[in-house]
Length: 631
Image 1 (cartoon, rainbow, N blue to C red):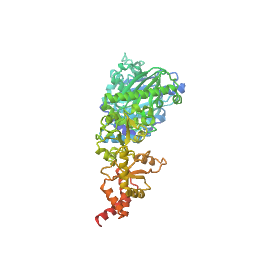
Image 2 (cartoon, one colour):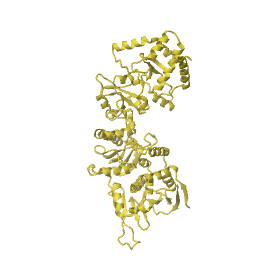
Image 3 (spheres, rainbow, N blue to C red):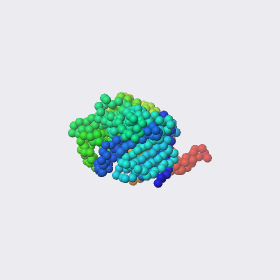
Image 4 (cartoon, rainbow, N blue to C red):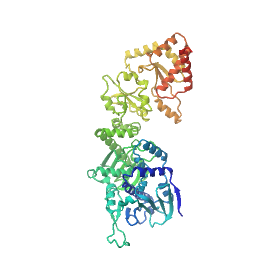
């Protein structure tokens, strides 16, 4: 009995996007369907390791392409794992992904900004829907390995699809496309052969194309099939024999990306462990780059036999953007994730993957600096996690990190660039952390640094405050946070110390009043050398957290209360001088306390922190302005 199902809303939108965006390049449908068939064969081989009955006697895995000019159909078949009734509904009628809402949001953003949204299709693995570029109707007949039942899924790319029981002699899947009138070229033998050679020649399984019958009048003749792909594992070839186009098409097959990779590394390792690797860096970050539940990793093969996707054991989390293949000569075919976790061989492979990836990025930075900037804007925040979690790689990673700075509105610079521009006599590398550039570049903490001509790096990724707790020096220069209480532009020495003491002594009474009024919120009040135009600022105590990180951790209810920071006042500011006079004369003492409260709130606003009591600030300002106006 036929069942009618409605497409999930996201699928309907993806269908419209595919047809609307890929109409100028419809031939990619064959690449996508062959890629899906190859995945089904790989999945069967993997599941058959634990249950050999799934493979049965049909051990020659293959993909077949059968054009039928008379019927106007093109069929892509495989004898892979197949799909059950529920899998057909889930895999073809919904986007079975926890991030489907994020996909729709990203699609809307891309479309409204006039950007290319095609990569999002690949990220979600929904390239199957490209079949509707060339077909009025798509029919999928599938039988799950180990099952006696077969089902047919049918749709015309509208709002619904049907599923009904059917017959299929063996396990596997047939995708039958009823071609559109302008897509009849995909029934031609040489056109199909050309497309397979261009896009899928590297697929390791046999791709067989139905031959044109020698006797056209004998319609009952048994069809014959010819293998049309080389099928050798591309990563096992000599890199000198592989073209850029072949690498790009293999990457697209592997990652379901619609764009060529930004960089690649093809290598072979010999020694106690022998394996080959082919690593890629994408051009664009996936939407789920920071989703802890998202599967990430490298495709693992043993002696050219596929073992598993998303092998996280050979890739540290801070390199989770890398895509690629590793092919081991030493691991057992029935390797499990539990075995991988305790495997010395895997630890050696992981070390090599890290080394080869960092080498690939270093080459990219030196040979194609503009492309490296593209990479860093997409993946830099992830790469910097390595400085925090695996400090043994600090020497290499510190050459790869990039930051915006006060030198330019948008350019990214290396630490080597910064050191090369340091002023004569400058000892330290100055930086400031914050949630975003627009908040930190106008920070009062930078006033004196800017006046003296010192460049300041902007560290605005969430990981930055944690990174700099371990990554504290570069090329003999300390990294100093402009928001830290450790910043002292007077320098060290006896003269500097006496100058500090003199400033504090001159304002001793006012400093004590600040501390009394704000005793529940600040740990210390002192004079400042970092301020020029602002009267006050809040700085981070030694060992404390940046304010935006403190807010983040409190929002996550990690059990920490507000930290008491240091309030610095500008002894040369007219307002501070006036408050000191009022405080010394013991006149309008209440007003002095009110101004102190206002200045504290002003310091919070200047650094981008929320006020504790906005209504109280509004009331104080009204009162003080009324007095100043004489009303």
